[in-house]
Length: 286
Ligand SMILES: Nc1ncnc2c1ncn2[C@@H]1O[C@H](COP(=O)(O)OP(=O)(O)OP(=O)(O)O)[C@@H](O)[C@H]1O
Ligand SMILES: [Mg+2]
Image (cartoon, rainbow, N blue to C red; front, side, top):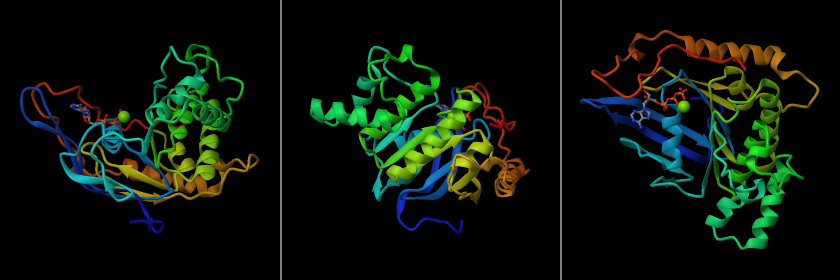
């Protein structure tokens, strides 16, 4: 494990395996025997080929599905279902179209029973945190993709979860918006000290954001490498992505992703399983 291995645990995966039943019989192993500690307040990124189990991993942390074997703990408590101690941001914004930005952000606060006036104040504060002051009464269809994703981030942070789970949240955005949201996320993370697990296809994104980068093997996902990637905070001037440190880290992650390991190549279960995953590495360079 890495030199930066955390001391206080935010999330702990112990021998986590996830299997899905396959139509026509058999099982598909999405993740196999995963052991990982994410430190409290750590920003951890996860990269891996398409279909290797990244979303499956996040869904289990979110409590939307359960491991077939093994356990996952948040701050020492075993996960038994969804909870307001974990916030999720998906690739698609998942905003309620009939609610304004402000009302979308208030959603989790309503679930938590926060009184109306306090809800309003907290929602405005978080819209401000993501740079959306003045857009409180806009509906999702009146916002750009980047703005919608900012609302989704504000909504996840507003009810103050201990852990923020992000599943390729910037993948649908153009490169410029993506880069500015990456900087926003780093700023917010430093300001709020949340434990963040950020899933991405992009090596650059993983290295730019993560204190550590977890590289998964093709399905069944196992940890192939954990790369320390604690780069200096962006200062708005330096092009961090072109520094020798960044380029070297990027290369290490690339090598880990592309390492050939015949043991990782597991045939698809026959006959007709769920949508067959591709085993080609689809690594988008953001
Ligand atoms: N509910 C399900 N039922 C059956 N199989 C599933 C289910 N969810 C995921 N899988 C399978 O588990 C494997 C991992 O899927 P998952 O969505 O976690 O991959 P991923 O790493 O997030 O891929 P991508 O990068 O394309 O988003 C895939 O083979 C997928 O077909
Ligand atoms: Mg996925």
